[in-house]
Structure formats: structure tokens, C-alpha cells
Length: 247
Image (tube, helix red, strand yellow):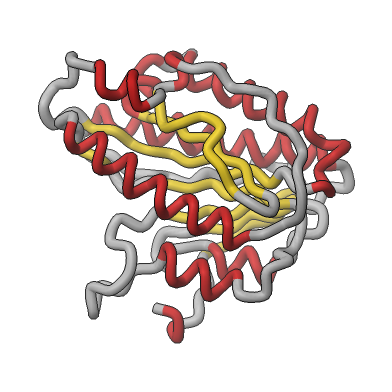
């Protein structure tokens, strides 16, 4: 949903809940041969959400890409109100660009939604990458941009539940550090030999997580419930691990 469409919506019921989800896709040059599989998977995700009207009403999705830089390709919106453009390969793998842009976009989206009268649930960010970061300060950037300390009140109070998905050359130790916050975040790594198969399994987990979470809004106890990978998918997963030094 673009800014103009957001400003034009007049039918918001005061207190209506929105569950924001951010899909952040690695489009670095190593993804050159895999973009058709990524594009097909993202479009399949959209179709699955649109098919569930309850989920489409509650879950709003933002699609971002990152390489040397990060950008929004689909602003936060109901999937039924937007189309997914073709994602294209770009440059290197700079994690920090994605973290900084995600923090900025979440704060902007939250302010706009609240101004419209929505009740905004904690966002969830799905981070898809096939490689290790080229920026050496990626963890410091992640911590400063997206961490929050309940003890001191420092950091990003509206921080997302950050869920990294790795495949091909993405290191497991990096994924473990990115899962956040400690009591909610999970990491996933696809160990299948084929990237197309890996992306299908990853996007299936994301699809099931969004649909299950969106359905939970009907119970008046909405929750982001991260789903397990399908048996035989070749995807391993685990709970967040973090260095308290950065909290």
C-alpha cells in the first residue's frame, strides 16, 4: 500500500489490529541464477495470503530487497491490494543496509498506522540470505538498529521479531546471532543441495507462519507463531542465541 492509499483509507475501525510482516530478500549477485525461484515463491506466498480473507484483513506485508543497499519494493499493505513486482539481482551482500532500512521503515509504518487508528502488533521480519555478510560490522549494526533493552529503555522499543532464513553459503553461527529477541526469535537453515528446493521450503514456513499468526487475531489473543519446517524439507532450525554484551 503506498502512502497515498494509506492516507485515503477511511473505513478503519478504531482499535482494529494490524500484524505487520516484513519479507527481506537477498538479491546479491550470487542469486543471479535463483531469481526465478525466489520470484515464484514470493508470488505463491501472496496468493496463499489473499486466499485467506481473515489473514488478508489482519496481516500487512512489506517486501524489501538488499544487496549493497536496501530498499522497499512493496510498501506495507494488504496483499489483495497490491501486486508483487519482479525482483532483480543487484550487487554485494551488505547485511547492515537491510538492518538500517528495516528499522527506519518499521518506525515510519507504525506511525502511519497508529495515525489511522490501527492497533499495531509487534512486527515480524523474515530475513532471507544465501551468503555471509561482506560488512564486518554487521552485528554491531544489527544490535544498534534493532535491539532493545527492557532494563535501560535504550534501543528500538518497537523492535521486530527477527527470523533469519539461510541457504547455500549462509553460516549457521551468523543465523543464530540474528534470531531475536531471545525468547521469541528462531533461525532456519536449508541444507538441501538445490536452491529452488530450499526456497520452496523456506517460503512454505513463512507462509504457514503468516497464516497461522493472522488467524490468531480472531481469538483476541493475536500471536506470531513461527512454524516448524515440513518433515523431509532439509531445513534445520533453532532458538535465538545472542551475546548479552549487545543488549
